[in-house]
Length: 135
Image (tube, rainbow, N blue to C red):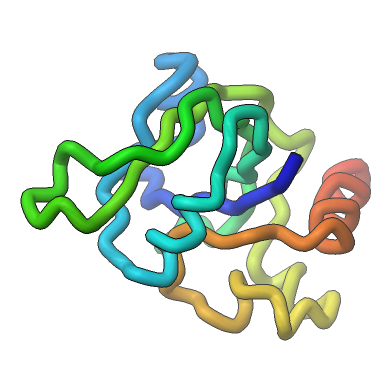
């Protein structure tokens, strides 16, 4: 099982929306690097949900329930989407500042701030899960 991070502007589609809807199509990605990441997703993979723009924090966890396929909202036929399902809200959000302060400079969230979909290495995943326990 792999882990990813999916970014969303909370005004567009938030973790609260996903929790209410239970599952959704994760579409609208129009970056070729993010497209390649989406294509590697498999049913059962995990995804941290990150609120971008003003919030800039990891807020929850979802799982992939339907694998990559062409995004029906893309008229060019080049981009992909997946279906994700709400798993849980993090006990506390993990801010972008915390990633930077912890020295995760090589993690794509810090390194490529505009990328909307990325792999999460196991050590970063473990750090997020441990960090959410801190009060």
